[in-house]
Image (cartoon, rainbow, N blue to C red; front, side, top):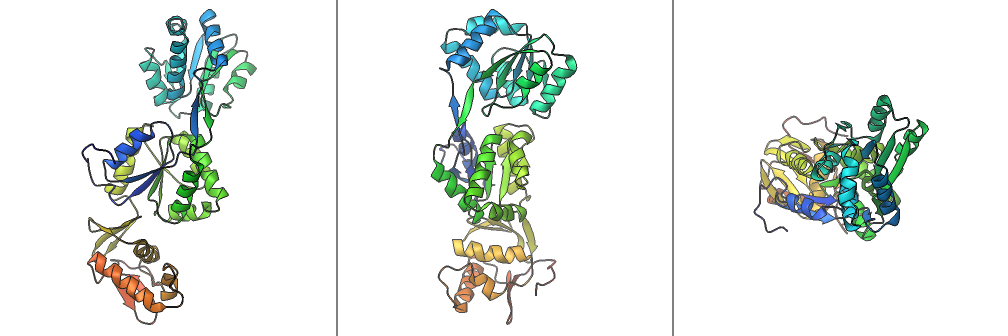
Length: 380
């Protein structure tokens, strides 16, 4: 936990996975200041190429023959390029070589890095996609123009081939690449926990990282379980921007997308979701009920429950006022066998913890249901 003072309790009771390598400490600290418990599970590692001779050689080429256009696809990549040039003693020569170029950015983070380096972005792709960026430059004309393209970690975005096929001379710059996760077991644990309902949200800041996390869920056989958790509102997928959200959407994991494509916006979006009544909830006779991985929020009160208690309440919650049989609830109990009395005891403990005896109704000879304000038609 961070030692900084808490900002709110909006994320109290939430367990959040951050599948992020770069700036993960900063993101975790921001979430913890709103009460979250954070698990680190970066699905990929950014491998810097500060000492990569190919990058330095390309930089020398641009100093000798300055580009007409500079394409910046990522903020971290552009900053890494400037750092690599500085390490090689080339920065003082590179800056004037780029000063006369048209500089275009693939999104606000890239623009921010351009400004930080002392340049100005002449155009920014609103969609944050390489497709829009390519279409813009083709419309302006690239024939016989010298274009420096700084690539993102996964490399193949098609821009080099697009510009070359339209008559441009391209200097390609790959500043970093994606490497394997620093702790593959942590990634595996995170996907299993998410599928089991032990996680409230999973946050992503890169498309390759999101893709690899989804692939890990598929390898471990829990992707369908995670889809069910997301569809029910039990788990929130959150992405820093539309590009990062792409692999999640492709896997039918509908994500929340931060409005401005920055870590601060991502944190605010998650805080607003859980603290602003946007999480899945039911209006009950005891007040609004929302689930958390460690308990429940009832009428604004966070109530900590055991893992079994959460599972019992989740089964009732998902029925939305319909009757849930004792047999089905029994499946949520560890080592209960055929002992239906164990179900009665577990329900009694949940009732006691919630301090709302009328919230869970007993339906004689059938099971239990939540006492919601507008009960759904009972399941038969």
